[in-house]
Amino acid sequence: MVEVLGVCNKFAVKAFEIYIILRLLRSLFKNELINKRGLAVAVLINAASTFLVDYYVPYVWINLAMSILSIFVLTCCYRTTIWKKIIITTTINILLALAETIMAVIIGRDDFGVLAKAENEQSIALFLSRIVFWIIIISMQSFILRDNAVKFSGKIVILEIIVFATMICELLLLCTGTQKSILIESAILFGSEVTVYLMIYLQDCLVELFQSREQAGLIEKEKEYYQREAVIILQKQELERQFRHDWKNRVQILRQLAEEENAQQLKKYVKEIEEKNEEHQIYSNTGNLIIDSIINSKLQEAISRNIAVTSSIMLPAGFEINTDDMVVILGNLLDNSIEACERLEASRSIDILLNYEEGCLILCIRNSFDQIINISGEEYVTRKENKDLHGIGLKSVNNTINKYNGVMEITTDDGLFAVNIMLYV
Image 1 (cartoon, rainbow, N blue to C red):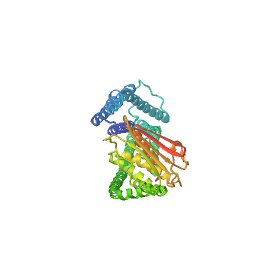
Image 2: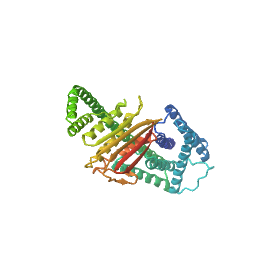
Image 3: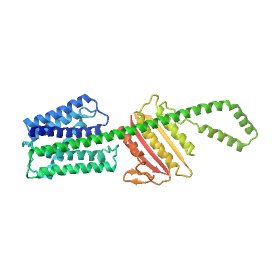
Image 4: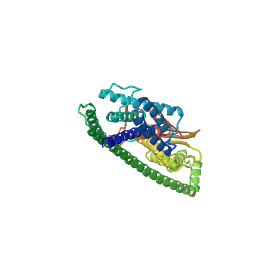
């Protein structure tokens, strides 16, 4: 029974370690996985080599060499440079060693040696070191890699902290206790491992749920933009039909005002024609339906709210980009621009430039604003009362930009709030 539990514990610890490494690689390489089947084979080789070394040649330096090799094989399943693979492999092994060192200091072990044999019975300490490794990786993803697209509520975070803190304390007591029962230790360790995997599974399920809800919201926005675009096109067609129908009458009125040399009435009548035409103007006609839909919809909304609009949209024929990403970027930025303009009594304006040059999509949106800015650290904070429901626009935009290794620059000069973005597509 003890031997069976021992094998299960070793397998569980190794599975936990591989999960953490794969999670880090997914965060680093985003959607650059090029060989799913190769990745599965690499995972099996990683696990099998660890068991073989552990049972037949359990020397620390051999285990380190196998760890370096197996992790490097995992990185080879992603599209990146050889130097980046080497750096990531080295970094992961350094973090693993750091986690083991931290754990050794906590439990008071100072008998490590590179050429010494590893003790197979130290499964609890090894599992705790992998929890430390997991905490390090999560911290890196949140604070260094900025991979925090899904943010859990405080209650969920507190629950996880309580569960893990309780479990770690129990395992530490087992490690430092004087009276030991191998069977009890193995059973408690296995139960702790199952608890960790259940918590991870629950977290992954919540991530999928949040992402599916976000995706559903984006789809609804896309439908709304498409419907508005269809209405705009129909209105434009009807306006052109009416304009052609009434052209003779308009020319006659213009001629009469010109003959009467009534400049004031002539200017007024021309302005009325311009305003009527502007009400149904199409600002974007690139052929990319989602880009045209968002820009035309939002700028028509701005016009209806007495906001002056200028645009320069130049994209090549057949230009394609992920529709969800454009909904996030254009939708959020134009919504923010309209909201900022509405705080002003006068001089409301929005200017948008969208251009594509040599593999780069360049977007610049400028709007007038009241020159009041809330900044916390390096982030812009919403001025709306409910900050849980609002204020995530620029964060979502920034996360989307990172998918393309792009850059975003924000400037606030001369009463204009400008967002400049460059995407590599």
